[in-house]
Image (cartoon, rainbow, N blue to C red; front, side, top):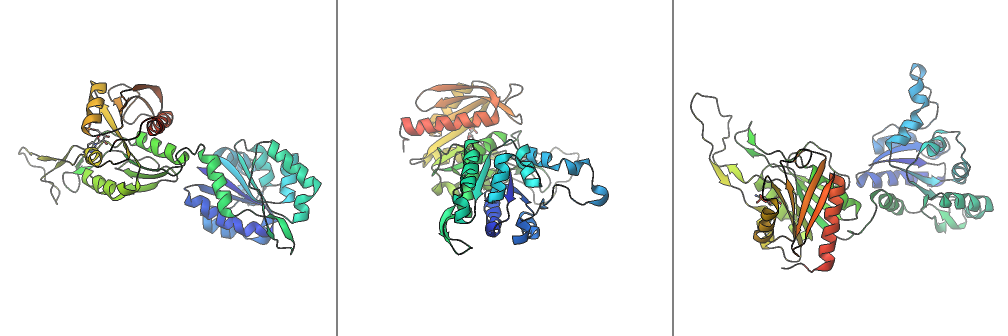
Length: 404
Ligand code: C5P
């Protein structure tokens, strides 16, 4: 998630520094844009150091020979590359410019080019805040659908007391994540998700793995964060981006995954085991690279712990979801796994249908529920499928209490 933080010229500009940290703590990438007045209160260098990015300060930068078309259309590129614009502090001047569509600096021009959600945190002297011109401009911005983080009351820098003080950076960060991450029906839940393949070493160079990309489990993790859950994602080796806002634990082998799962199980009340865990590991794995010879080489395999079955044996009140990647008899297999591993739902998918399953961006799955219900989810993006899986989990939690 990429957010533009527009900083206006007010005493409260220094609080935007804390806001930039709070947003980044939530896994959000922050691009700061400062008005020229803002730079009188706090330097671009502060934000550049905090965000590890160049701060945008001018519509027409003096870049000598670099002054090309690309700098002239930078506000368009920034508008396209970011999912939300938050303006904090929003001064009376910035509010007036936005309300009336002026575009005489980078931030106001970006505002007009930006089509995503806008969060505005005003800050100014009480008399300015109460002035009919500002009241009217604020009405325009509210009617436009922008989210306003109302200023608080208190002693202002000018010595007066009343409304106008910038909202707490925490409240602004909360509003930004609510807008970015949407419905919050999993707020208060702790979801533990495993994803990806495992790697079982043969020697320090070689290993046994499988075709799982981790995309399905990561999509579920991403969707759960957006819906307000605390998400612990335990992942085998993958090459896809870690979803913003998750607590991430990287593991290699099935045994490492088991240890990670049990170290976090106490905190979790929903467990989703989307990982393609290797069923075996090499019993005689070598510490040194095995040299090629003309002789036949035999690898001996020992069974791995079945993490899902172990969690199922001590599931308590948790909701437990397993996955069944099958090449045939999928529903029957899913039902069998639900029984033997004590799951509340098993997500079954055929891995031999082209365009779905491993590594692809889409999936079509069959949900086998402990209520006996079978729900088909037609081919859709893994994001959409993830949302539907979470919808069913919510239903399970509300309709029938989990068994111990
Ligand atoms: O029995 P099977 O391996 O096909 O079951 C798949 C389900 O069991 C998946 O949810 C997978 O994450 C989980 N599993 C596990 N530990 C294993 C093998 C599979 O947790 N060793």
